[in-house]
Amino acid sequence: MKFGIVTLFPEMFGAITEHGVTGRAIKNQIVQMQYVNPREFAGDVHRTVDSRPYGGGPGMLMLANPLLQAIDAAKAGLKCSDAPRVVYVSPQGKPFDQAAAQEFSQRQAIVFVCGRYEGIDERVIDIAVDEEWSLGDFVVSGGELPVMAMIDATVRLIPGVLGHKDSAAEDSFFQGLLDCPHYTRPEHFAGRDVPEVLLSGNHALIKRWRLKQALGRTWQRRPDLLERRELSKDERKMLEEFIQELAP
Ligand SMILES: CN(C)c1cccc(CNc2ccc(C(N)=O)cn2)c1
Image (cartoon, rainbow, N blue to C red; front, side, top):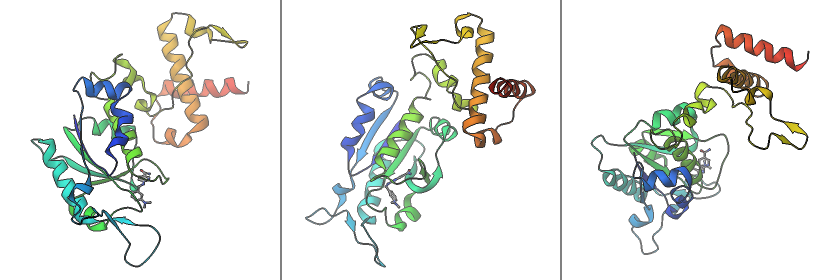
């Protein structure tokens, strides 16, 4: 999978290209990253990429012309048979979630546009942006960090990227639930023991316990996620049991 990144700060992306699962995916050439800096297309001697907003207001906006040229260069640079879709990441976008990461991971390529300042001239969105996505309802200084998070969430779902093939599949967000509690050695720590079932070696029981914990936690912390998820008869029974066990 290829990513074309339009950004004023390409060096920020070292955070995902030099480390961990994403770094290994790039080293193994499962993933390719290319960068285009709008400053390369700034016409004037000062290489200006921002300008004050018409109508007044605080802050600056990214100029359309350098951005549009950078987006075109990024699309061309990916050399994809199907033109890659251009994704602009901003607080005004559609909420990104695991399902979106799953869908992104099946694409051949994506061009991400990282806004800075107070955003970009709207005509760039009208002319060149195919999709607008948001990492959540908050503002950071630039689109780079949200884009890196989206790329990380996407890349780990590409087959062959994660060592233990089940790791991603077991990501409980896969089943629309929060994750269950996890334990590792030592068995006894700070006067707290690992739940017996996890030491039993009974994989059916362990699987059931984990699903029950995931259902219970989701019910406790994120009831909104439960609303969006059909529960099977057995899952409903497990959730009832979990609630019973809370306040016997
Ligand atoms: C209107 N405005 C402030 C703005 C507009 C566009 C880009 C930026 C750059 N900052 C970002 C980008 C994305 C997100 C997110 N939630 O995905 C948060 N912050 C800011």
